[in-house]
Length: 378
Image 1 (cartoon, rainbow, N blue to C red):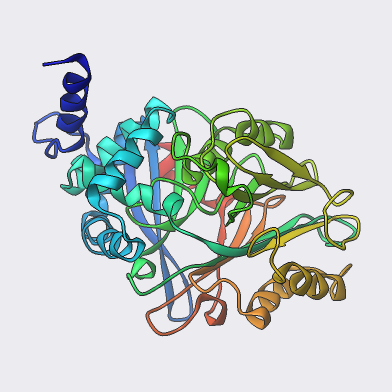
Image 2 (cartoon, helix red, strand yellow):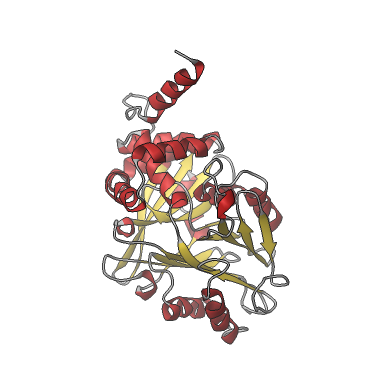
């Protein structure tokens, strides 16, 4: 056997390894707890996790096994068919990601697979989907004087709901043994981040794009782990930008960052090779101090539409105005989030099978209160 084929065989063995079956498995209830938050008849699961990467992953999988299996065995295959990708193609794409991921992320995914009774291949394919899909979305961030009460940011996620990803929404509060505690606004069974905020007052949003498509490659960090790097490890705006800019990326993407403590905001136009940082002073669209935004891509007509709506509300932007803007413009069909990173609060609306998120009630959640829960003090 050649060295190349030996390495391929080893990777295949790791990829398709069966779930863990041993007496040494962690106590899921020691490292995880399920709760929920309500607004009227709207219920969102809250999952608390702490410990080592493997312990957090295992508790996540064990406590949410049914939901994780639904995402991995129903939603992900449906998305894969919609993308016209074979499992072999996605496995090769994941191998490109894995070379650049922190070891602790791979350990967490191993724990998720073991806890949920999934193979690692099933978990990896699920976590590859966001980066190989096209996410047409909207974001803005506002600071005084645009938003007089403090820093405000939205994440309007527009994505196909036919595969059922919206059925198990969650607020996953993580207190890892290394890094900053954070909340991952997503779904049970997902460790990567598409919308998130941390206890240091950093919030992050994302938009798919193809502005530098010729340089795209899957040999880098997928967007979910670019964002995970930021929400788990950034303590300042400079640190957040550095975590995006200075480590390998994959495809053309747009990001929004806000730092509540520093009252700073920016938008990033990234590709595999470039990272352009836009403040209110150099955003290539009409704006005013304390306001950055992007919608549906750098070259989309939505930038003018969203910009006009924001400028009409300039100086009065608040949580209610942000929610109404998403509802009026009909952006944020899968989930719609408003962050207040300076206070640690967020509001999230999630789609159902027959109603878009922007038309659904918002649930308020406090990261600061969550981290005071007795679970994290044990």
